[in-house]
Length: 539
Image (cartoon, rainbow, N blue to C red; front, side):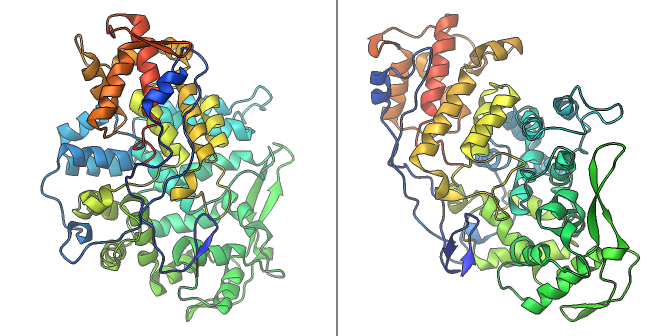
């Protein structure tokens, strides 16, 4: 049996591919119009029911979905698919940048992540962490949980390097650790924890593995600070194998876990009475200094330092870490239930590259497999993808405290994965209540007129240049949200733009792109409707 990320149990042979289907909860636009839900204030969501996702798998040998060979040319649809998987959304300016550079060159540049803290967006976000009561020299050293969520939300919506945040969320979900239990003398551990994923997301996996094992938040989350020579704690050692690098029952025994627990000993939490902050340090007196045998390899007896580097090196050398990680990468970015041949090939590249991740992602993002019909079938968006995707696609920024609050309500607040398994995936996000809450989150973003106006943001920027027709406006908004609509749906959207809805009564009134009121009210209204299109929950 395999424990799934949602916490459910299923047999290891089961598979689910998240197809781009039209869920049964979709409600015809005309019903929304009749209900008057697009009035200027207090929009309410349409929706209900649940949609099924058919399963599938890789094609026969020679099928593009099984090929990691470089793709020769990239269509407009390919570029949009690439951005939807790597940038939260298909933002017009980012699409233009990919077109100008060419996809392979763009990917190479994208994988070179900027150093954490080096951008003006991050420096502005750091101001969110400050409190008037912070002592001199410790400004930002006592942030609340809300401030930390807002800090990351601010960066996510405003960054010029969204792939950095997409990668960070991938690792944050896979190496899940939460700050929920941290008191305010320890909450400052959260920022370096998040920055670990943000800064090293495309770096060296072996280096990342050592860093995450020594990370203070991780040491607290999985009881590393309680793991001593006289009372070994198996939590981190078990999850290091089971969830992080090998998988359930994949080449290790209970005896291996017990030896690993001894090797992971030595860290403790301390309090600094001068600063009022707590910290974590290595204490040789709590470290098991005896020899350990891990997978047939001996870690020599010593008490000078921890055994963490040795543990990672032995595990990576002796066990198929590359297969487990390659599968996780394919399942997150390409398709679910990847063919074993593709997993093996990508994993071999990871090991051959001496655990450098950039060559792996470069190969995947330029491969035939990544742009195959199977890969384009789609994944169900989580709340971060859905909400940040809407904000970034439209450019309609919202106040970070509301963005953070919305993500918390939707069940995916960065910094707080619910369990060591991370967040749910796939159909777990397609409940009726989730769809209503997502629509209401989009409505809230759309309602932030004053805040957006203060930043010089207008929905008019989403319109085609000149004096566009209602049809051209619909086509532009559909493209911004990366939807595929039928002719009948398009006609309904055009009819909406060319109508007034007052107290539930629809009357014809041609859309005037030169009329500021028409643009503000009707374009915002149509964006709200489009977030309820059956394609929107799929990326």
